[in-house]
Image (cartoon, rainbow, N blue to C red; front, side, top):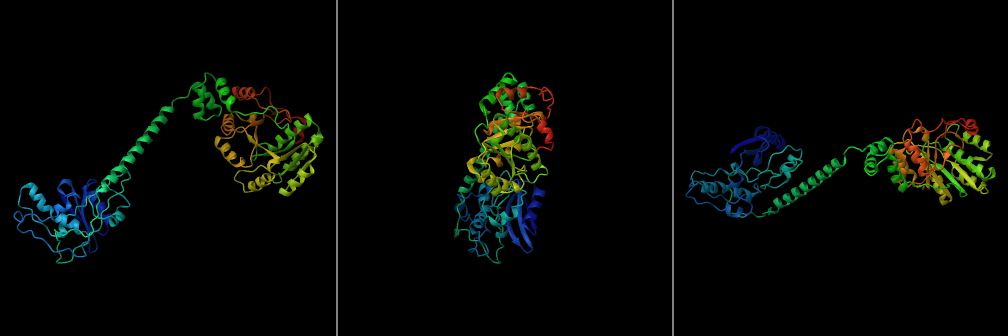
Amino acid sequence: MKIKRYTGTNTREVLTRIRNDLGADAVILSNREIVGGVELMAAVDFDASRFPSEEHEPEAAKPAAPATAPQAHTTPKPTGSEPHSAQVSAVAAMPSVAAGREGTAHATPKPADDLPLPAVARVAASASASAAMQAAPMAPITLEQKDAAALAVAPRHAAQPGSRVERTEAPPHRTDRRTEPQDELGAMRHELQDLRQWMQSQMSGLADAGPLTPVGEQLQSLGFSTARARQLGSQALNLRGALAAYLGKGLQVAADPVSAPGIYALVGPTGAGKTTTIAKLAARLVLRHSTGTVALITTDTYRIGGVEQLKIYGRILGVPVAVARDGEELQQHLRDFADRRYVLIDSIGLSPRDVRMAEQMQWLQALGDSVTRLLVVGAGLAPTAYAELWALYRRLPVAAAILTKLDESPSFGAALQWLVESSVPLWFYTDGQRVPEDLHVPSLAKITALLEHDPVTRFDSAPVMSAAAAAASSPSA
């Protein structure tokens, strides 16, 4: 066993030198404060069996036979400068114990300050080593944790001149640490169990991350998530079968939406096409009923041309259009249109992060259950965008969705997956600018046919704007 003494200004500095000099397997035998810093004794090739255990420490602390070490002598009771008297007394007996084991009579005890304390700890590079050295009491411990947080050794103060250590003196306040190894072993078992569970989950994920089937690749190209495409692709022989199984069970559609008289508010982000969609819906109602049954209200006073665009549609359709600049005006216009069977509200399109969105939400929430709210969203958004929008608008609450711009979306599987997995009914979809020709009531057959066709040839001909759409040539909301 190689033993070396190291001094330095602080514990961290000395530990670094020990680690660099003796390696990570070095063992701290003792430490104490000296003038200008600290002193540590370290060793390599340390044999822990030569040191008495905690359970037999009182026996090991008894004085050895003087025949083997004539010059050894007992010392007086320790002074207040030696708070770890039990540990020092145990160490004082070590030469005699070692001599008894080796059968020699050459073990001469050193002075108390030169004897190594029975404090065993592996050296590890950690920022908490210095604090641990100052906080934990002296004890034979070995910390081998996965984060390599290092040792706990308490400072040892130098004995006052002339003071001796009483070997036979029992420690005044002995702390039993026999449970510490069990606690450490228990913690290690828990860590190993967690590690095993993590590895099993990772291996399970790797097993599930196999290549997609041809049907799964088709579904992924349509915008469905990889996980959903893998699941559906492994359960169907062709694309139509996969879509029928998934959409047939989960997609909610209505045979005749917006047929019941009432107030309908179209909400959604900017650029979703709310103004054009509300014009298509108003034209559909006028054709089915009459101009005297429909009225329009807009709260879109922020967008340039937003009000004028809806007024143009209103003049063409022959229905009144009112502008609401706040919640009170909105409720007043609703009272004015109480004789109309259908009142359609065009709300402002704002980003979910816009502070004005909260104001618009309050207006619509104040109307209570008297209003049916329809969420208008584009068909080509990313999956995260649908999740964010739904987290915002579901608080209104929203009765159903209108999917717009299918003609501009090469794939809209992400939109359908959001509708299915969020249980949002789909009432309409749009695929062009014509009013009202490009507003459609969805069905499983229609949606499946649109998904199966190539995006370039999905529609028989390019959309042609009707007279109403041509007159209202402003950009859609």
